[in-house]
Amino acid sequence: METTGAAIVGDSVVGPVSVRDLDGVVRAEITPLPVRLALLSSVLGATLAEPIVAGTAFPRVDTAAMDGYAVNGDGPMWLLRSEVRVAGRSGGRDLDLDCAVRIATGATTPRGTTAVLREEHVVRTTAAGREAIAVAPDVPVKDDTRRRGEHWAGGAELVAVGTAVSAAVMSVAASAESPVLGVRGPVSADVLVTGDELCTSGPLSMGQTRDSLSPVLPEYLRACGIVCQSVLRLDDDPESLRDWFSASRTPPLMVVVGGTGRGAADHLRAVLAELGARVVLDGVAMRPGGSQLLAVLPGGRVVLCLPGNPFAAIVALLVTGPAIVDALTARVPRARLRGRIVGRFAVDARRTRVVPVRQVSGGVWQSMGSPQTPHLGDLVTAHALALTGPASVDGGLAELLVLPQ
Image 1 (cartoon, rainbow, N blue to C red):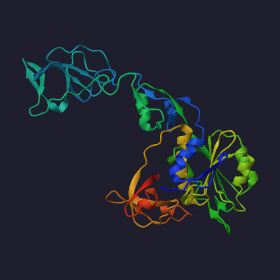
Image 2 (tube, one colour):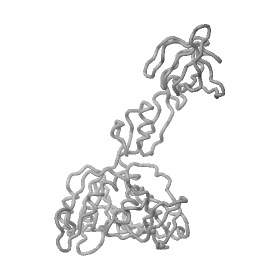
Image 3 (cartoon, helix red, strand yellow):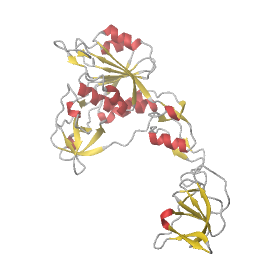
Image 4 (cartoon, rainbow, N blue to C red):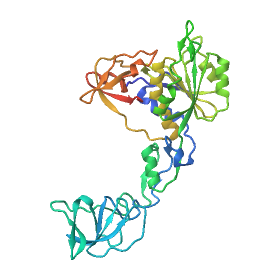
């Protein structure tokens, strides 16, 4: 979106990275998590490290796709037997020529079945004093049998490596008789919110402001595919910050809010240097949210440092968080969502400008104007964040980051 890049000096990135180059830089500098074998119940949000392969054909046998009648022969009339076939049961008598049996959706068809006719396509009648069915007049003749292997054959690859494990992927794995999957992740994180001025409870003192990020960060992390393990708030104190980094923790990601500047109260860079952290990126060419830092500690744990302003912090998280998840889990990124942006918004040729937008009639996205960074008020009625550049003006396209609702 913008052309500004970053220079690499030693093992660190100097200068802001463009939004366009962000994913590549993060993926190149972060080592993926090890592969683990896990039960389906614990893999939501992870990434497949091995493909899902069908353990059996689906369906395993011929079944009825609709409530109706299993028939043998071309008809147009079949003698009706008295039994009813229901799902979950096997066995039963073979179906003789010109005979029919009532069958429920999902039930195994009896041997000899040539077709399943849905309930509404037949009428009850009699033949030679016996109950029978016939095809109803003026209805299409359609076989509603679901054949063995109709959806997939045993041994077929159903979902590829690098796919995010969604609820749909879990359902496919269960249907494919794959109760254990090889995955990376899901990515979990500890969160630290810093700032002497922040107040979490009780009345505000002079100079204090309410901590409006700690309660909502888990939800925005979840939108990035990150599970929040803990949220802690500390004052701007280098010793406390050092202790927090040094404490024994298991999550592969640590998220720090505040301290990304170079002011008198910003100790983050100095503490990371003391701990031997390797800086992956120092700033992203966007506004707001550009004042962010990404580093890797000697043990491999990733540290994402967000600006202290609430709106800027959320923007930085939604832009960089998914890239971190993709890198840690070796995930294949999804196609970017784009939309046409209308309305007034600032344009910068050197960096991405992030504006809240809402969808309006006609399939376009209306800019809500320049955001205010000290709070999240601009997100109350917004549907997405638009990453805009010069090509976005006058109804041009911009990348969209959908907001959690």
